[in-house]
Length: 263
Image (cartoon, rainbow, N blue to C red; front, side, top):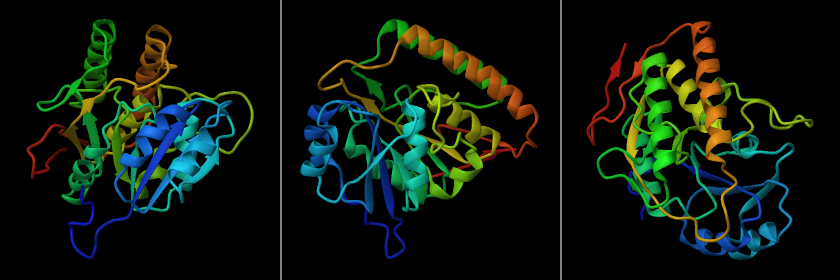
């Protein structure tokens, strides 16, 4: 996995990993990460030794503690602290394959603004998704494509990368403000991001990705509860998009070496 094969102007990569009680998984996941500019672990109030294991397993890892709760808040906190040119969203449970990170970086270097992981484009797949979750994802994916004019094949997948320069325009809830959980702080974050990528007219390119099974523990995701949050997010983001000047939508799932946008 050579992230430095693009020449002297190779972008710096930041990997952001939200984690809550993932010590056993981090022991397996962190050693397999490719060498990058920085790895940021965002701890979500863990009660195990997540932080200690992370620091022991990957010396030099940056650890920050999120202020509120939820995956969305953790990711926003990591984005705000990133200093690399490219931000890679990476789960701590072992479901994301670190060997795919160079594919995401290459996609951005070739001209995309966003490299969107997809389990449902040719070359992708999942060893973890259930029939129920697959059906729900298909419904929400189709609804989003209709309402926002996108061509996503995997709306709710959280393995994505994008240029850090777009973080401010995403207008995520301030991760440093204490208090109760805000909308966008939970698992709906992937949908929020993908909807706003489209509203901003960013060039999105889908990258085939294989979702692996969680190594240890049980996911905090609740298919029904979080599915309803995603549904509400799609409607809210459609209303939000109607108030934002449109800058075009990118055609997703393009050829391996080409990008094109649809105005």
